[in-house]
Length: 373
Image (cartoon, rainbow, N blue to C red; front, top):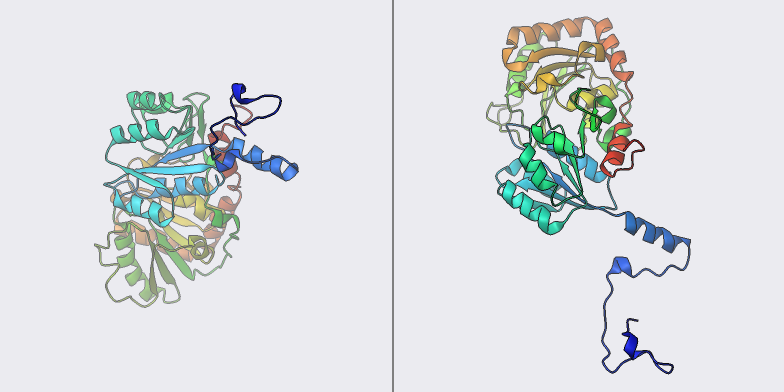
């Protein structure tokens, strides 16, 4: 009951005007036992968290998938995604994931939404932000977490988390390297792929959009290789933003070649693979977690700076893909197929890494629960 002081007398607590005030559900919990206390405690810890990410052909879908992985591990908090209307691939994926999404035209509209919604935390998974923009953003939010940001704006964020690049020279607020890899939940249950002396299954995955068209190149190569290696099957996994302009989808499938679009559990495909073709993004960590040796080509100059996908971690890295000839790609594949000892060593190098703790570290940093913060 709510009453003004003047309405309270020795004989009554009710004034002349009586009305109903409906309490918000989260504020109307009576604490009668320990379980009620726990509910209240959880409600008090609840935060409003905004994820800002885009996904489209030129940059791929990695930012969208990464933020979705974080969001799935922040259940109990209020989550909203902000993405640009023009980037339909990313917007469509967020909607399919049943996330609350605010589509904006530009950064001005984004800042207006931040000012109106008043989040506790903004996770900005955007490349190369500018200092002025992040300073403006921080006027409306207490905590800004930057992901993979190498721009001047990163220095203005509260923390920067970057599993793909390693650079220990940019201050204590930067968290770099494989310790902060956020594997999808499905990889926590995945078992290492069984090693086979003879390659039986090759998986080909070049991200959500494959901006450089590597899928088509490997598809053409696979049709030729299958004649020499008839026992090898090639499994192409195409992302949600794949453009289908190179004939991989739409033509009659060749023998020994399978094409799957936007698979729901990519870990299942990886666990059955003996060898992989991939680009130099987050997929390399997923392959490493199940021990699948991989031939790697970078989609762009920025990807060449990703430090994990190297031979000492079990990867045959060919560098920037547009500079890799089809002949080099074929020779590398044939060599790995015919040298099982090398593939075994690559697998062992991958499996020496424990990549399962990264998500917990990143969640703690986002929520400012790290002891060193």
